Image (cartoon, rainbow, N blue to C red; front, side):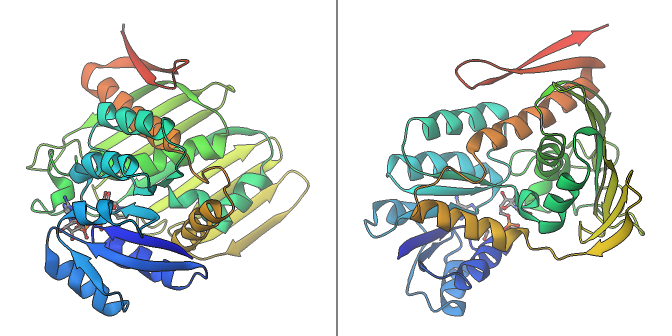
Length: 334
Ligand SMILES: NC(=O)c1ccc[n+]([C@@H]2O[C@H](COP(=O)([O-])OP(=O)(O)OC[C@H]3O[C@@H](n4cnc5c(N)ncnc54)[C@H](O)[C@@H]3O)[C@@H](O)[C@H]2O)c1
């Protein structure tokens, strides 16, 4: 039985606790939140008896095998490093950290342990996204759109020092999805965007085009200028040598048009949260490789930082990974 503790008992705490409750071979042992009433409430709802407000209690608990870091983004850095120091497996919600430097430090700490570290890029686990990816064969281009309604000014994720705003917070999902769909690494980006309306000063809307090592191109539109009525908050298009696919309505509807004459629409579910939890627990149990390695979190964060740098300096920003695994950005103004 794999024993798990959650740090952060808000929306993601509830979501992951619900997924874990459906899985065999795993027990939710303890919940932690700086607001202890939230930890208490989650424990009550899932019949768990250990709750606390000090994450140190989780790290010191010898019975805990794996920690889910589901706290506010500015708390991820310390919680992740301490989870790894305490010798426990780590599941971390996106983004890895508030900035690229902290994300790279988490990745370095992860490389030094033999513990399983997984980043919560749920879109990789949607059955419909996997199907879309397989349909098109060799990919040529992808367009991912994440457009939300305006985020409230008092929302923590919309503060520069707590969540970084929606382009950082949600953009990493889109950046990772581009890599996943195009099956390659980004080499450069040019982007336009900035702070259009948020009083908190965060970058709130961005349009970025990435060049990938396999010659494909990926564009990412991310912002909170308003949700697309027909497409919904999450949508994407992918073209490849076998045809084209498009997904809309939060990736629950897939259109397929292939060169062999196939033309159809398929429907699916938002099954990524459950399937990523299943993959994490199975990987610990069977000593498998991470189903979504920490390097994915670093690269997604680097892509968004590169795109913001590009927009702010009107520069093409080159993206590369060195032999140590660190991601480096290099601006080229013209
Ligand atoms: N994968 C996804 O689709 C997805 C969706 C939403 C949020 N997220 C990510 O999950 C994380 C949590 O988001 P949420 O929507 O659950 O936010 P939330 O505000 O609902 O919950 C966050 C909780 O963390 C607690 N907290 C803050 N600092 C803490 C600390 N130092 N130690 C312990 N608890 C602390 C808060 O009291 C709060 O209860 C964020 O990093 C966010 O980016 C991912």
